[in-house]
Length: 273
Image 1 (cartoon, rainbow, N blue to C red):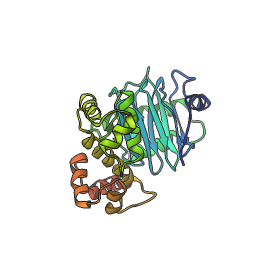
Image 2 (cartoon, one colour; image 1 turned 90 degrees about the vertical axis):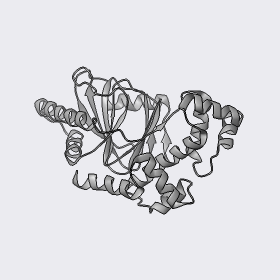
Image 3 (cartoon, rainbow, N blue to C red; image 1 turned 180 degrees about the horizontal axis):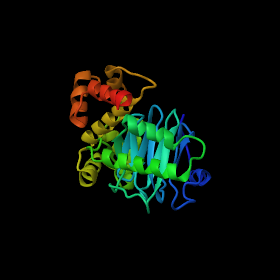
Image 4 (tube, helix red, strand yellow; image 1 turned 180 degrees about the vertical axis):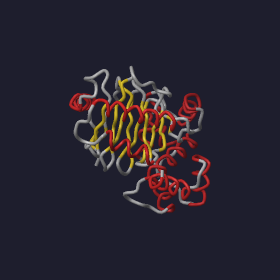
């Protein structure tokens, strides 16, 4: 069960970690608050976040992102986000915006090479390190991230900004297997015709297409989770696909890789970089 922190509990947690106390110092730590969801918040520093195992989910105003242990999320300073930590601690590092520029303006998931994993672990290791060593480490980390951010971005699930569509999508994410346009309309308190009009106007998608993307985003999460390895058929059924072939075709169209290739590629990058 994931504990959802309130905005005040999230503020206190951030204060306890001392994230905003220094305007200049770069630092990192292992976030041990597993199975917790931090409410929406922002930092004055750039954040680099990667789970030690399993996955984390990060929501922004625009999208829902899945981040595996073979990846990291670069979150520019000032970007509001809500983070759900899974069953394992997460490496989280902060870079003062006055010293380190961000090559992107919104959250982006980047591949975590062997070098980046080693740097992440070094940057979050307990104990103090000399300032010159810390500065060199975070400079190399920043350079490595800048290079990785040049790669194509991983697909994410766009989030609506309106309150009604937001309620519909929140319901969808809890009922992926059984959701339909009509059930989303009922939950949002509008007619299905109105729901379709809002989806088209705000997201440029039909409700059916959005439901499919939500299911495929969840499938990415399941395929990247090393702690509970599921077969492709099991993943397909868990996200609401009764036909594994149709699931594989849709997944390839969404990510550019088949489910087997996607999982093999993620695990391979974790092993070999």
